Length: 278
Length: 322
Image (tube, rainbow over all chains, first blue to last red):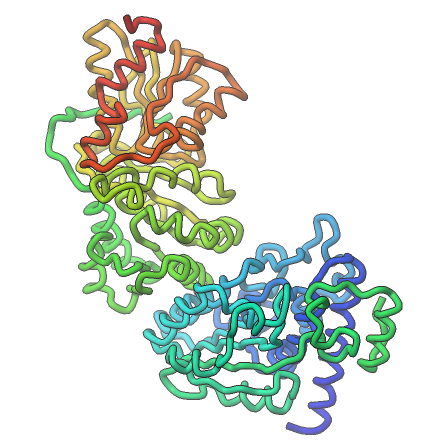
């Protein structure tokens, strides 16, 4: 990928980061840590040209489906959808306001671009499996992507969905795990050990690739080579840092749903090389 | 209110699952969007033939109810109309959050077919009874809840479900029932069917208990008491007009359900009456208990969900039970 394109993606990801933090500062609620860890994956999918979606026709039948299973990271998700043109960036300022379309957790009936209502964990993977099955049944070629948290994988429904994806050979399905190693209360490995995670997915019949979830070149390469194996669903484990890009938030469980002060917002903007948007 | 002439209830009996599966096959033949999702329950959902006829539109997710409902939502996302079928006890209880979030809140066009509901699995015990499903499903916003009474109504509800854009829960029993609707009957969403007219007392019921309510009406008639019988197959939306009219025109209402009365049909009717036209009521169903083991017939009798039980409840309500 061209150096200039990568630079553009990095700039876009950091803009998403500061927008998500501004939203969280505005509402005094949000999930900063996961917003920051997932920003690069979201940016590559939506702004790197991976997802075939059309903001002018959010319900276009042939679109690729992206399901944000870790719905609590709505800050990064909404900022990405706005950057892709699904709704005005200005609207991000209404995050969690009374009657806002920007719920704390995504609502497909309110906001264009949202495929599924998520928030409770472990819902996205089964829905993604269903959408991938629908493409197979109808002989269509859309692809389905689902982004899950790593702590989220403690929900058994994900593994039920994984077995179905394998059984039905859903090579039009890609599960991306935001492996930031922190869940709400603690590090994942102190809570319920997730490692070894890649062999878990491969034993469930997935073609698995581990990548640096902040390296855009690596992310774009793996996204451009899907499916990794014909006849198999793909799992991409994106190794990430919770709070990535903002030194005071990086790798700290407290920043799972930490809310930045105005001062911290400016510190973050400086580190990210972007302006505080509002 | 729909007026339906009742037929004799001593006739041949039917397993409503046959009407449901036959209709689903016919709908799938006509509409390529129709597909089925099961949790291993191929035979108990009577979908063996569907699987043979439409192997590419049949998904067996294995014993995994949360996944089953989520997969249904995803299929709807992809433009299919999935019928997600499984034993009601597991389909509702095991996947309740998926039913709430992926169907009710998300408004996906998914049809849940809760099979062998109520106490149909009598001998298997309380784990396999589904006496809570009516209360659980009817309180979820956007979820339409229907309990058909006989093969004809089951077929009509199935056909209606394909025209209805939104999530539905269909409660389908395996307990044999006679035909209670005549051939001219037409199911209408949100409308109770008037099965027997009367001005003394009203019996409101649905599902497998409609036939028993008609027997109760006959027994009451022998005593000079004329009972109105309403088949409230549409639990949500509920026929407020028919309930309020019954409260105004008769001396009280007996609700009868193969479920916990709390939150179920009895609860639903009581809510309407309390707010719009308070009237004397009796509720037949399960009080705050799990049912013991026994055949479905035994358990229905055990909880007085039979003609005698309804007669006694009506007489008690009318102050004539000496």
